[in-house]
Amino acid sequence: MSEIENYSEHIHEQSNEHAHHILSEGKEKWVLYVALTTAVVAVLAAIAGLLAGDHADEAMLAQIKASDQWAFYQAKSIKSGTIDEGNKVLLALGKTVAPEDAAKIKSNKADQAKIMANAKDLQHESDEHVRLHKILARGVTLFQVSIAIGAISIITKRKLLWYGSMGFAVIGIFFLLQGTLF
Image (cartoon, helix red, strand yellow):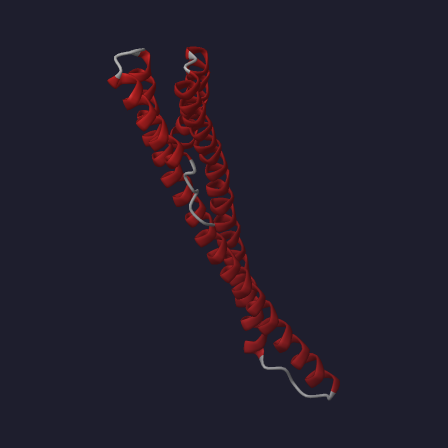
């Protein structure tokens, strides 16, 4: 999975330029707070994006390892099947079967049980990383929405939009915490 792109960087830069212009005129001090909170939200978005990307990578690696284990499981099954079928042919021809063949089949079955358990553990690990990736990706999305609405609040000079953007940021923080603490 690829890293989550941060589409809000350009918007954040434009809103900062616009905020600088408004502040240089000496008007509306609240715009400074919008710019500061937007910068903090951008940092949180970057952290959440980094963590989400890390979980996506770890999910893929665990899935690859699980697939390798399932292939190993199948190889053991094929080996046992080949020995068993060879023994059936020998018995049909009236020949004796080597006693070590039965032991080898039994050993392969025991190995398969261990391999299956390992593959299932790796699959569970992958699923858990995907779950955390999705939670953190939601946080990134909400942070980006927050940044965009914050920029719009500066451009339109509406404090209510800034408060709304902070609401989105708080929900984003919830997802960030959920993805890192739980």
